[in-house]
Image 1 (cartoon, one colour):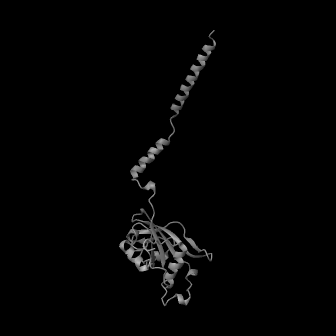
Image 2 (cartoon, rainbow, N blue to C red):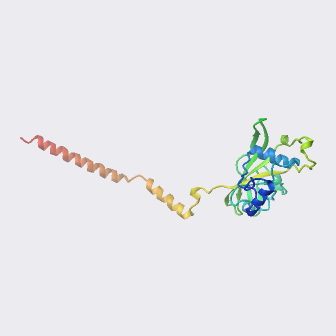
Length: 230
């Protein structure tokens, strides 16, 4: 679990502190992330494991966040700026770039009760100037129905956290093959493919037909000469 949540040498330390074996990977489902981590964080309940750190996503670019290189990592985030508090399909400033929503928000339905417990939105990070990056984020938030207080014995004397918390999964998407080569090489390849796909000129077809016709005429004339021979 911890390998995806902590950075560099800190990953091993965090894993030991959480009591998890080396090599263990954190791969929660959307429902687990919402109900067993974010909901417990909001209500002040003990978490299953200390594997999701708190980070100020509004101040850091995705590659500056603690984590395992380009691998996925998870963070709790309490929106403090207006653009993050609004949420929804609006942009969210992050360092010198911005997270922009991609597509519509989807509901996360709990399989047991068949009711939506949270919402998930995909965002893409854009550099300053508008260039799109390969970094993406899934932002999860709880719906009001999922924040009902748990039984008192689950609270363990803790004070509930503010209800604005979200949990985010940040990861780097693989670069598509058509974007890996420099623009000049891509343009030259496209022109070459276009030239290869062009049909041959009509004159060559006519010449070929004439040549075939000439051969047929020679064959027919030789046959006629042979039939007239006594």
